[in-house]
Amino acid sequence: MTNGTLILMRHGESEWNASNQFTGWVDVALTDKGKAEAVRAGELLVEHDLLPDVLYTSLLRRAISTAQIALDTADRHWIPVVRDWRLNERHYGALQGLNKAETKQKYGNEQFMLWRRSYDTPPPPIDPAGEYSQTDDPRYADLPEVPLTECLKDVVTRLIPYFESDIAADLRAGKTVLVAAHGNSLRALVKYLDGISDADIAELNIPTGNPLRYDLDDDLKPLNPGGTYLDPEAAAEGAAAVAAQGGK
Ligand SMILES: O=C(O)[C@@H](CO)OP(=O)(O)O
Image (tube, rainbow, N blue to C red; front, side):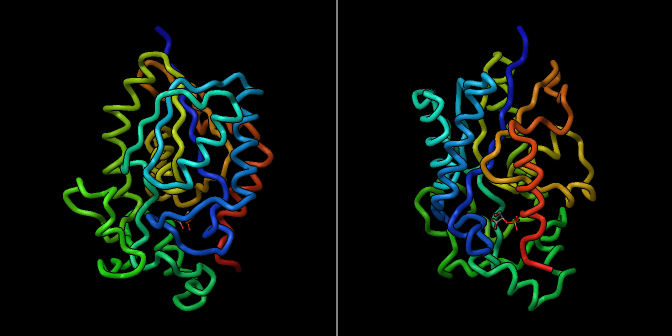
């Protein structure tokens, strides 16, 4: 039995991507541009003959909606869906809701980049009673503890065991698996798949709405390290735009 194919897809542009706000676990919607990116992602799946057998998403509507639109476009709206909080974006702590450019200006580039891209420095914790906290959100009622902040290392810790137990089983069964998630949860997954160091992962940015294909060997190691974006040109542009968020 050959291993299946893994397709990673970050959601299309969200309202807070457009307004340049730290988002994390805040459940914002797609913009019209984000919806168009999702349609294009579905077209790319068809053009590359990559029709998913199963969908894994986070519990956040920007990933859920992107996957739904893309799968509808590809006529695969009927496949089984698994949603799990472990695919959620990194919790951005007290930065959730803040404007990225203003934050960079206020705290300086070094602190800004430490919070955004260091592997193990979490932002300050969010006030559990604050407007953008998820402490009382019913979708997380079963969690022993709702995070108040997370660094990328925390995302690796919650996500990789889930990948190994659940998603890997579908890949080993030969399925084409679509994972619809977020910039930082996908950075955690790519770090693991490609064996990227804690330091080097800081440089990796994931563009919105552009499916990234991984062909995997028997140990689920990539046969195409780094994966293959279905639209490489748009991916390079999109990744550069994410890197530049916050401004010069
Ligand atoms: O705000 C966020 O949740 C993420 C993704 O949009 O931002 P960043 O790329 O700055 O980690």
